[in-house]
Amino acid sequence: MKRNSLIWLLALSLILVVAFTSRAPVSAQGSSRSMPALLLYEQIPVPGILGRVDHFSANGRLIFFSVVGSNGVEIENWFDGKAVGFIPGVVEPQGVLYVPGFNKVVVAGANGKVSIFDGATYAQQKVIDFGADADNLRWDARNKKVLVGFGEDDGGIAEIDPATNERVGKLLKTGGHPESFQIEENGNMIFVNCPDAGNVVESVNRDTGEVTKWQLHGVRANFAMALDEADHRLFTVTRKVPMLIVLDTGTGREVARVAGVVGECDDVYFDASRKRVYIIGAQGFISVVQQVDPEHYQLIQNVPSAVGARTGFWYPQHDRLYVGVQAEGNKPAQILGYEAED
Image (cartoon, rainbow, N blue to C red; front, side, top):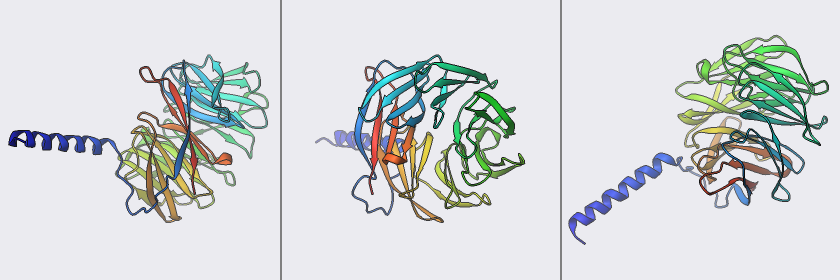
């Protein structure tokens, strides 16, 4: 081989290596695990829907997920692996929530409106206008209320009573638009990601409305959040730099930070039975972080998914993680189903 050709090949190899490592998360260090922590067991095509797949919810065998470009909610039967229905008429849907015990589906839209549908017929029952950017939804099982994160500077977290389909209670103000938020089942605190309020996590007392801000240092864009209430640990994932930050829910103390996780995360889940964190990111991986003990965490694997997929749903009753993949070119949208492995 000529010298110039050899030099050209070496330069091309270096470019490819740099390009790959700039896109892929860092591999887990020190992990001897040979089997995947998440095993891909099904790929469900969802033809005919457009745009980004946003947030998920579930009821038994049914999975609900918002489809932004199609202005509605797709319904899949995970057991049969096929689409079974579609709820239209929600402008730029974001959060979706199946309400247990009331058989209702609640959907939040970027236009600030929250729509309530019958869980059997999917007929629309009510639309409540929150003004701007209705986003994440959570079910408060203790108080039997739907919590809605909405608004910008004038926003916060509000309540809907599914028994009456009416907004109730007082508004819990946040410092900016509330992204993902988590609620204590056995306490009175709500934890909120507020990236546009100085990249902080806010701890909000539901009884008094008092807000305590926990600053994140050296990282920005904290959107996704999960909670380990038993160990008093809060997980927030930042995009700049991609990082898992673990906080003490009692004090806000930073317990740990884990580098090398996937970037552009929009959903993160805590697997309580395995003490693991699943981070879904748009780089095409799911980062799996293992709790060694409540003070120490280790990235054990980056499991391949699909480029652009950053939302999903952890179904603890079935040990399954679902990931939404939007349509691209001639490829239809699809749902990837993973089974957690011990």
